[in-house]
Amino acid sequence: MTTDQEAFDALIAAEQRIEPRDWMPDAYRKTLIRQISQHAHSEIIGMQPEGNWITRAPSLKRKAILMAKVQDEAGHGLYLYSAAQTLGITRDEMTEQLITGRAKYSSIFNYPTPTWADMGAIGWLVDGAAICNQVPLCRASYGPYGRAMVRICKEESFHQRQGFEILLTLMQGSPAQREMAQDAVNRWYWPSLMMFGPPDDESPNSAQSMAWKIKRFSNDELRQRFVGMLVPQAEVLGVTLPDPDLRWNEETERWDMSEIDWDEFKEVLAGRGPCNAERQRNRRTAHEDGAWVREAAAEYARKQALLPELVEGAA
Ligand code: BYC
Image (cartoon, rainbow, N blue to C red):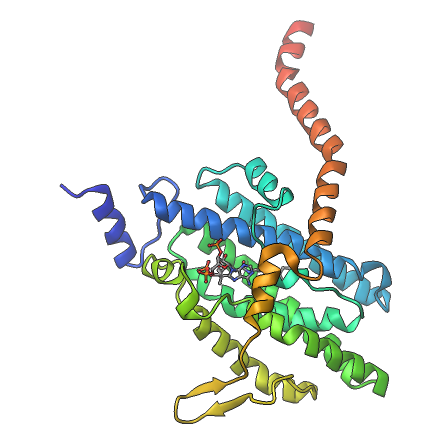
């Protein structure tokens, strides 16, 4: 007779999906709750840096596109919270972890967006990094996560293209516009490389997550792939990637690059990035301001449940 663990191992080995009904090791469940909830929080907090520009977009068309993009991020958060809920954690628990500062979310969303060009840089670099990281997650061994990622990746591709197009337009504009685009690329380039997580030899979760086929590639492998994608695109845009040491190494068949500032990464993760406090305060305020909506929805649901009794009583 096969044990639960053997059945689980066999499904993973056969590239089959683990579904909510299946037995799974506690550590697998915990890792997925950690990663999926962090991912959901990132999408929700990630609405803030771009939301900052909705009222100031330079044209009606840009405004409509930006609003749609920010709404997409909310949708991504909701698919991911739903996927995490299939593992036994509640939405309330996840929200509580986020607004009390106990949950992590992607470091990238703790940087400010002072100019319109930041909307271009976020789309091109941040959504670009997200696509590199998330396309392999479409094959994650946990069914609800992999399926959520398929739809998310389709939308992220559109987001990346719109960011690229904003930068391209600015780069074809006045010297001041070109300067603004280059400045935004300078500020977002390094933080976007940090999105992939710590270097492989300092990534405590990678080995196990890869063995479970949640992650398919290591943090450094994906970072390399991302840089390889950016280099030709930067040429088309006419922007310079702010790393004088960046070059293709024929021997190692890898991109040589300057050392990432891991101290800055650690500071941001510890809650001391430029916007950590503001992002969290805004999220907490939005949650508190939305209390009446939750109360109204609960009251509506209660009345709906009473309806058959009321109808019967009237008959
Ligand atoms: N920021 O062992 P490691 C978007 C943490 S939103 C913060 O390598 P793992 C978008 C890590 O959690 C998309 N924390 O971890 C939205 C771990 O801490 P814990 C965001 C980070 O899980 C709006 C510790 O460091 N994408 O696209 O194997 C607008 C050690 O790391 C970061 C996702 O969420 C970081 N950058 O690998 C625009 C992708 N990096 O939990 C765009 C899904 C690492 O042990 N997540 N940490 O306390 C993943 O793919 C993986 O979780 C990671 C990290 C690659 C991020």
